[in-house]
Amino acid sequence: MGKYFGTDGFRGEANLTLTAKQAFDIGRYLGYYYGKNNGGTGKIVVGKDTRRSSYMFESAIAAGITASGTDAYLLHVTTTPSVSYVTRTEQFDCGVMITASHNGFTDNGIKIISSSGDKIDDELIDLIEKYIDGEIPEVPFATGSDIGRVVDHAAGRNRYIGYLIALSAYSFKDKRIGLDCANGSAWMIAGSVFNALGAKTYIIGNEPDGENINRECGSTCIDRLCELVREKKLDAGFAFDGDADRCIAVNENGEVVNGDAIMYILGKYLKEHGQLPTNTIVTTSMSNTGLYRALERIGIDYEITDVGDRFVRARMLEGGHMLGGENSGHVIIGKYASTGDGILTAIMVMGVSVARKMPLSELHKDVHFLPQLLVNFEVTDPAAAACDPAIRQTVDSLSKGICANGRIILRKSGTQPLVRLMIEAESDELCKSAAETVRRALYDGGYLN
View 1 (cartoon, rainbow, N blue to C red):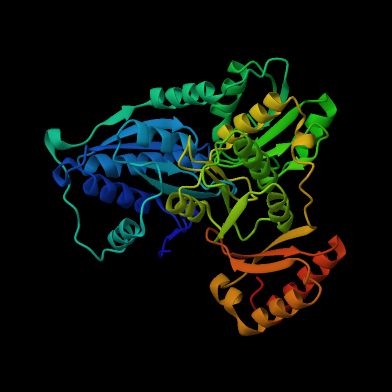
View 2: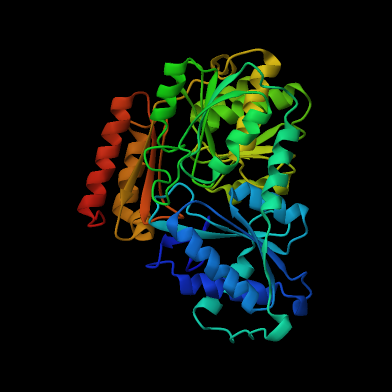
């Protein structure tokens, strides 16, 4: 990826490593690149999550877009998949989503979405980065009546809500469903959708204050939702992240149903109904070996990509595959969306439960996951740490030793100054032992902060 843009856009700490000036410059270049003088429609749609800094970045990006003579259509607080949907269905040149997804409120990010609803290609990313760094000529300012307009486009978000409701083939009447909106984008949409489908909803994480997004809530901190499902004896629960492009489910017993289990549930159902045309699910290297064994038992093929939903989507497009995702809860259902969509995923999983007249626990009971441990290490140089020969030797030794019947993967994060460690082994104790061995190797190498 580029100097600023990682696997999921430009992300950093607000006004430190991602500044309002940079956001303005991104808006300037997008407004110029997609302007009418360059053959575009002169329309860009912009959405944001609930972080305090998202309002600042929205203003900066809109100012940049309009300064270049292009109109900025504001969806206001909304989800990343809604920006993708509106961009591709309303003929916008591109979409911009202001979010740092599952990160804390001090971070923020800028995702740029192409007219097809996918993330933009690397060539445009390179041009934007060169413009930010002053390596290509300044683009002209529009003047007079050529200055772009800022347009309230909340109607686009409402169209997306209607689209989700229409996609459900089943009523959720008499179903009691918990929703954790992570104090983020989903709070504007998820409750409306599930209420319209007849569910009795119990919602937490729906009081954003600009600082509490993802704080002890949402798909990365699911304990509260598990407790809610058990306490209220709910049929299911669904947790989203800050921009609602991922979903983690909770079954009626209060047990977590992660992205791997969700892909199994949906893949099996689609196959049974002739809607998995290539009989293949696209996963990433972080998916659990237990998923692959379960898919093999029911005759579904799988392909494995690098970590990141953009890589999953690219492989889906290459192979014509219908379903793909990550164990973190990014699930792409290609018939209906071009990106991971947490609320859509929740609707589809609940739909399978209703259609088969089975609780969630029955739908994923045949997936037996190996004990898995995910650990993030904050390091001084993620790329160097992940490639360090001594550390690679440690990982290789573990792979041939206590992880021989599982897997061990160490990689640099594409969005944060971290290396991420994934370990699968025969027991939790072996996972913890391997993690400690890697931690010591990182410490001895001088990488740990």
